[in-house]
Length: 507
Image 1 (cartoon, one colour):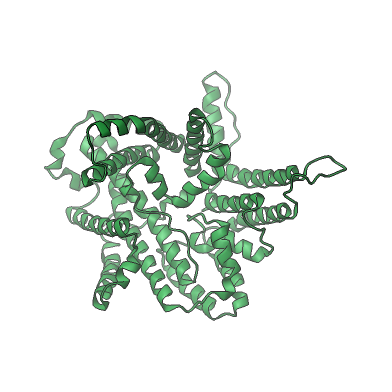
Image 2 (cartoon, one colour):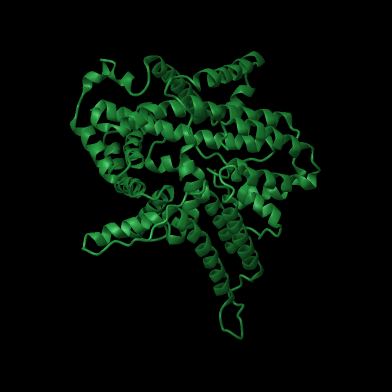
């Protein structure tokens, strides 16, 4: 069930209405039923996997919570330390959940990689392979549940005794299949207080609906339209030169941002309508002034997850420079692999790791050079230059992310640097990248609107609902009606246009 489908248009109001009028004690149960129905709408068998993950992490966390954390506590019979038992339980929980994730997402990739490796030395390939369908959202809810377990293990959160409420935490339908990956200290505490939520709060409901409308606009008007350009170029890169290939890479960078940001925005809006606050997953990432700044703004829930549960446990910054760089590279490589079972994703993560390391190595020399040249770091030109350089690096890396294989990525990049075609900037060729001229103009206007909204958020830290709340009534209604009309008209415009599922569903 997609957010921009007719089914969801019926499903969501029914869920909200019953949620608002059912007895307070039934709220959690009703949302859990609705969440499982939402998830099973893709495939009923998926419910088994999320139920297993929920039971394993809940029971494991309960057991960890009941074992004293005091290192002085010893088991006199076995001589094994209590902390050792807690750690063993946590490891078992990780093994079970990551094992399920590995089988459904990475098993075939691992077999294929092994076959390629052993084929180089003349060994017969391994035949074991399973063509299994990747369960939607498995990476997201697995990481959310494992993060909760680690929080309990560290003593940062108490183990949730209610299986009902914990199951709702894992399966909460607005953010279930594509995040944001919520923390127990944020969402779990809201679920614990679900009976106290003021459901019929008009202002909050309106704000939530505006967020949902904005997310829907980003998806069906911007993301799905710019996807036509990206797909046209990436499917036949041999037809294009430098300008066309650069346009394709920029188009994909806009597609993945608008698509994923759209899902997160709709998820936050739907949750807000029901009285829950989900974390903001994107904070104007293409206004970042460095790669480090980009990762503080892009897919924030996943970035913070890897920081807290991978990078810091590896040693973080509390070690030598060489070890710190190794920790960063491991974190980025794992992050790349999380996105998909392909070496292109690993290479994408590794390239961002290299960006971070090189950026750190060059920081002091560049600062000295800037001081010698009396560079004004508060000037607009300085900040603008940093933004442009960061965006160039990010867009270049997206080529690896989008390409079908490393070979295809290499061909795309090689052709981009060796087939200059500046005349296409003036002969109208760039209008023929899958879109008719009128559609291309529509896209440009919509991208300008997106830029203005993001610029306001970047400068004022103010989202669309708050921005509209400060305006006159006629202006608010004009904007909202205008967005609805654009969704209805331009969201379905064009012979070859059709709305796809959200990109991150496959991750």
